[in-house]
Image 1: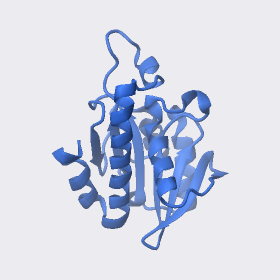
Image 2: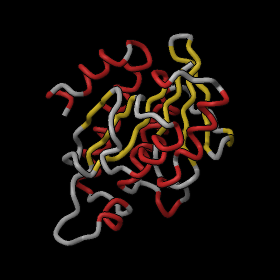
Image 3: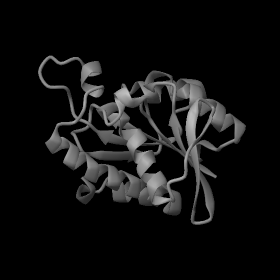
Amino acid sequence: MKVVVGLGNPGPAYRKTRHNVGFEVVAELTRRHGGASPSVRYDAEIVEIFDGGEKVLLVAPQTYMNESGRAVAPLVSWYQLPLENLLVVCDDLNLPCGRLRLRGSGSDGGQKGLRSIIQRLGSEEFARLRIGIGRPPGRMAATDYVLGRFTSEQREEIDHVLALAADGVERWLREGLDAAMNAVNAPSAE
């Protein structure tokens, strides 16, 4: 079994904000695999799909970004999930808008949802797919920026990038981390 966690904030007020791109990737994967309604367990919305005969949980924590680990850690524990079978999808202020970066492990890079997951799991050894949202303009606070929505021009680009991110997740599911990293991190994927 594999688990794909898309990070974001629950509720309609945060829909389509920069911080919720992880939720959007999980929603795209749900749509591609039959559009099942989620169940609510472990402080998360969870959709069970099968990809290539393998069970996959698509997870959207309902704990708010900064407490994402509160949903992810119990799920990992309950299923005794090896961390190499966990992929977290999130936004990244430090990547240019629309850039994707997939890594097999690493620090939180300032992303508070990842920080929470790392703290709760006690490990950085899980894959993460970061979706660049760029830096706030001028003196805009980072919090206001990540909770804001993309401009119409950015939205068009981001919709395309979210589809590429979902493609990358599917490659990770079917072919493993190295194949997915080669595809997602390639210059043509930007």
